[in-house]
Structure formats: C-alpha cells, structure tokens
Length: 521
Image (cartoon, rainbow, N blue to C red):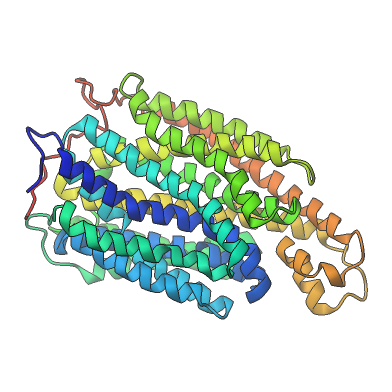
C-alpha cells in the first residue's frame, strides 16, 4: 500500500521517488558522457561527419518517435512493469554500445537505446503524478526529478572523463548496467503499480502513423541543414505532415487514443510544451559545440573538460530544484521568462568566444544557458503534467519528454549543421594542394577530422581549422540567442494566466488539477 495520507505523500512515496530518479540520472549521464566521448570514439571508429551527427542524435530521434507509444503502453500494461522492462533493455543494449566495432554498429546501438529509453522517462513522470497527488508536493517531486537529470549531466563529464583516462571509450556506456540492476531490485519494493482504468485496446495503426509522421520530418531537417532545399527534403516533409494529419484525425475518432489531442485545448499544456521544445533546441546544439570546443580547440583532456562542465551543470541543478520553490510566490511564467533572459545573455557570451583562451567565458556563458534549462525542465514539465487528469498522465508525460528529446536532437541537427556549414565555408580552399585525398576529405568535413589528420597537414594549418570551427560555433550561438530572447518574451505572455504553484486562483500550478491516482496494488 502507499503511505499517502489525506492526499499527501508518505515515506514510501519519497523512497519511490529516489528509485524513479535513478533512470533519470542515467539518461542525464548518458547525454554528457557521449558528448565527452566523441573525440575518443572518433579516433578509433573514424565516423564521417554525417555518422558523427547520427551517433549523437539517433538516440534522441528514436526516443522522440517512441515516447508516445511507450507512454500509452505503460498506461495499459502497468507503468512500473514498463519501467522495469525498459531498464533491463537499456542495460543490455548499453553493453552492445560499449563494444561497438564500427560507427554503423554504434549508431544502431544508440537507436536501440532510444527505443529502450522511451520506456523510462514517461513511466517515471507518470508514476510521480500518481504518487504525489498534493500539488505542492508534486511540483517539488518533479523538481527533484529534473534535478536528477541535471545531476546525471553534471556527473557524466567527471565520471566519464575519469573512465576515459583509464579505459577505452566504450567503458562509459557500462555505467548504465549497475543503475539498471539497482532499479530492477528496488522498484517492486517502493514503487506502486498503476494502470489506467478502461484504457482500451492498443492501436498499432496509431503507432505506425505516429512513427511515419515523425521520422520523415526528422530526415527532412537533417538533409536540409546539410544540403538545403531539394526534392527529397520537400518530399519527406510533406510525407511527415500528411501522416501527422492522418494521425490526429484517427486520434479524434478513437475512444482510447494513443495521444488524447483534447489535451492541447488546455492553453497551459500547449504553451508549456512550446517553451520546452524551442528552449531545448538551443541547449542541444550548445552542448555539442561547447564540448567539442573545449577538447578540439582548447586541447583539454576528457577529465579536464568534464571538470570545466561541472559548474554549469551545478547551476542547472540549482535552477531545477529552486524554480518550483520560487514559483510558489512568483508566477511560473515570469520565472521561466526571467531565467530564459539570463540564458540569452549566456548565448551572447558564447558568441564572443575566441579560438584560444576562451575557457572562462565559455563556462560562464554555458552556465547561464543551463540556468534556463533547469527552470524550464522543472516548471515546464510540472505545468504539462499538472494540466492532465491522472488517467492521462502517461500521455502527458510522454508529450513532455517527446518535445524535450526532439528539441535536443533538433538542436544537434540544426545548430550543429549550421556550425559545420560555416566551418566548411571558411576552410574551403585552405587545404593545401597535394594533401592525400582521405586526409583532405576528413579535414574539410569537420574539426574532428582536421584534428585526426593534423599530422598529415602542414604546420599551422590546424590553427585555421580551429578558427573556422570557432566561427561556426559563434554563428550558431547568435541564432540561439535570437530565438531565446523571443522565447523569453513569449513565455511571459502565453503563461501569464498561470498562478503561483499551490495558489487558490484558477490555473495555479498548471491549470487543470490532476484527478486522484488509482493504484492497482
């Protein structure tokens, strides 16, 4: 039985929250460890520029594609059961990723990790909404959940850097194994099972339509940022839009839809999702570019880069746990707008970083970017989940995670590709005549390729490549700053109707209050 009394969570629920935080820490760790690992695995697997991007964002795109499916599946078969299945799968596939022998094998493993990861996040969020019916307790619990993600991101560079200093690049993926084991042992003891009553049958056609709606759009974005508008880009985008329309039409007709589109009628739900999506685009791109800048341009070891990434992650940690507390007195829309304004300042500072001696400026700028991330991750997620009734918590949680993962992946694809375009434009014509074709192709494609080919290039050429890469990062950060300042203003406007968390006025803490959880244990 739950220890909840009079609608308030008890000791077992808080212990369960600690267990639910484990996969969140794991996924946060997985994000930053991979960014840090890229230079090491690039030297051994030698991926092309396109393969590098797929290694980075295959996970994000696949998790975004399957989150809706897994969120609804958890409502039907049991959210705790799905969580445990996903944890076991994540641990097994992490071993496969650790021992990948080619770039294609690692891409496949990352894609499989995305599918496994799609079972974890909506399950944890939906279970939190079931276990914490009290609005203030739920907001604090979601803040702890978001903080756990921040903790994982902070821990990843330090632990991963230390492991890379002593072991091969694949060892960092093995960090998932002990986390999965602990979760599998403790979840049945502390976490109640939940199934949505009268959830109906699982509609495989809706699953198919959702995937065909998302994946062609993903392909169109990736190809556009690489080659611009062409026939395949337009065709893929049109296919995605067509199937998205078909998906929505089918959801409106079903008694038990994969996604209850009526949730979007709640303006708090829709506005919070928009803030999460756009806000995470800048974060995803900046994470990729900053970690590359620290290692490829500044020449830091993985351990050193991980330690420099620690202070920004600490700021995200503080924002994630502190913003729900501030939002008890200040309307959440103003809290989000204020922290996003600080993130804009951070992007501006990153746009000013030079090709040498810019570590301190990068850390300060990235710290401000992460400050905004912590606030929107905690408050945005709380607003989304709080706007849905308990039986729709899986669907709402899945939507929250879908837009966050998609935002991160789009950030890597769009800002990463923009930086690469600037790099290639500046480096074009600078590669000396007579350079071996393999070295010339690698050096002209990305900074990682330039570093790996440096010994076959004339002295001083690598400095030109570093300057070109820095210019690419600066350009991407200018774009991110412009988008974030608009998002800050928009947040203050579209979320102005939301009252303080736990307030008595309508719309406080996310709009529609959640219905009491119904546990099947």
